[in-house]
Amino acid sequence: MLATDIMIIEDDPDVRSALVELLADEGYPTRAVSNGAEALGELEHAAPRLILLDLLMPVMDGWTFRAHQLDDPEWARIPVVVLSAIAGVESAASLAADAYLAKPAFAERVLGIVSALYNPTTTCGSCGRAVLPRRFGDVAFCRRCMDEATDTERDVGGGD
Image (spheres, rainbow, N blue to C red):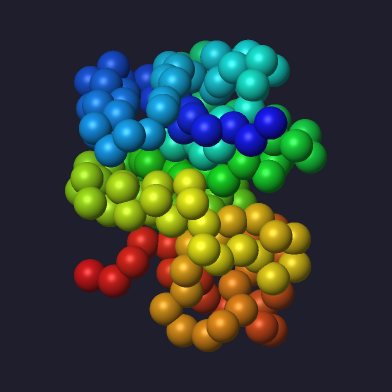
């Protein structure tokens, strides 16, 4: 069965509530947890369609959660957007994340990336995972399949 909800993994209750409200206002079903360990428990019950992931959290941080997620072939297919104040695009790439947004993130950017990954119009040319549309070129690859010779840069945040 195709998952329809977005899992928000964020330890700050104010940020978590704001993300739930923002997405709910746009009609997205959500579920929210406060750390990676809770998120893994949720994945055992039902996988979401998309994950918004903070990195610095108690109990289990975003890096550890992502390592566990990538170890499971089913869970690894779930697109992940890293939302963090401490990491950059390089950290998102090292996590094989589909997108990165620096906190605080503008609502329009969050919604733009969520929309692109929730209802993808572009998929990886190799494995078929959802990817964000590219600014240039016709072929896009997810971080896991990217070949430096064919795809050295990827638009993960849109144009400013």
